[in-house]
Amino acid sequence: MTDNKLLELARDKEYQQVLDNHQQYPIETVTEVADYLREEDVYNVAMSLYRYLLKQQEASDYYFGIGQCYGKVYNYSLALWHLEKAFALQKKRSGANYYAYILERNFQLERAARWYKRALNEGYDRDLWTLSHYAYFLEKYGQTEEAIKYYERVLELNPAYTWAIKRYALFLLKQGQAERSLEMMQAALAKFPKSPFVKLNYLEYLIIRGMDREYESYLASLDYDNAPFPFQVLVDLFDYFWRYLLRGETNGEQAQAYEQKANQLKDSIHRDFDDLNEILASQGGDLDEWRRLVKFLLK
Image (tube, rainbow, N blue to C red; front, side, top):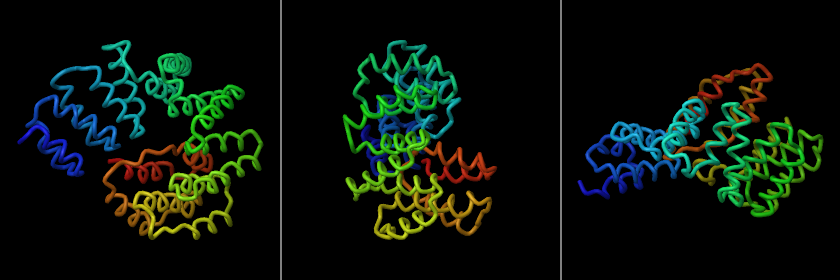
């Protein structure tokens, strides 16, 4: 097989062939494909390749790659273990921002704060992902004024950064500014009417707010049948949460239909489900079933 054939298989989304054949290729080729798959959100396949690579050589980049994949599939403890190894092997490597995020997810708050600050000092001070996650970090740990500053900094740099819009709107809601929060979400819909991310965020927001009539009305207005396939899968997941799990119920037929559809996804969908997790946990809902359904989004 030619060296570029493995990358062609990955680009064609022939993931089983990648898994079956990657050991026949040079290490440099497998590394390129593992990195490509990670960047394309195909985390579980990428992890298999990184495991193989680590058996050949304990390299910082391999530990970081697999650590980031573990983080993307919500396994934060294993993510941290691998990232610790990555930075032990190469102390001044890139990725301080993601290391900070994983430290935060493992409740190592003082270390997370130091690594976020290091990331900002090492060139991530205009990186939207870093700035928005740092804002969320500051929000969660009570540094309200600083959180506002960083949320507004992100939206100054890019008013269309949809994750920051959602997070800032929910932050305002927690601050007792319900009207301003809703206005922010509605303004995003008006500014970016074709964005599937804005639509999904608004649907999720209505669930979080418990706005029954508005949810049903907005759901009915979505052009579901002509929407991108991943959009449909997430709408199905949200709707199952709304109609069943949130009410302490399940529906085997609907869950199976969602699972069958999600199994057709070619790429992973990594999403912030923090608020839905918290709502379900606070109401004594079936968090294990919810997490099981979310795993169908991960490839």
